[in-house]
Image (tube, rainbow, N blue to C red; front, side, top):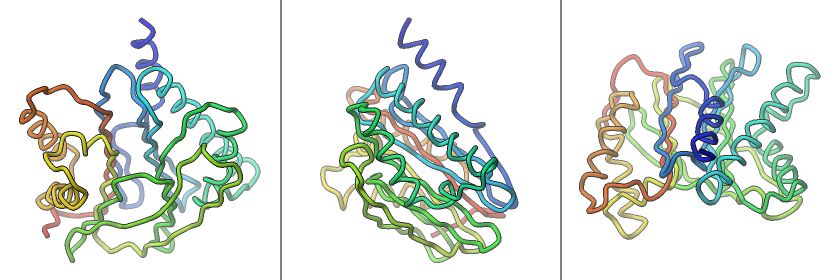
Length: 249
């Protein structure tokens, strides 16, 4: 009963499965290893000129991990509210926001760390501003030039007090797709080393037709190849895209 209640509470906080604004589309899916998940995804408008989105992975599984995703959502909602009501700019600065979240988590002493990618799309400048708090694997960018990892460095949230995080920037192509996926995917890929993981993940987007259903089908195929078809770890993924038709590598 407790697990199902946690699942219901958590699912009520996820955004709509698909969101579109000013030519940008975001959509997600997730596969919890048990009823509730330590993974969480959210996206939202920030005024008229920005879109914010994140994928977070709380250490561990089950009710305790899912509870912390609820707390994380409340922190993010607070900073979004501060922007709208007070003009606070932290929600537009991923590095600064991570520094604040890191201290918030440590102050409350939740005794769990969080890996997280947070990005802000500046629609006026056609630019992605982002920071990565140790989310792995790195995001994959697919455009007319092919698929490649956006390699980033970072440190988990909730481990060291007063840790600083920085902003990074990408000029967005006219047509692009970015895939963000949690590390649970590595548990079902039939590879034992990082380069093998990267090859498989790049192949995941090679013929992607800009929909989460394509990823869903591949995950099911990988699961069916396992002796135990149960998901060993939470798997969640987020697509951020601006495309008129399928991109090919």
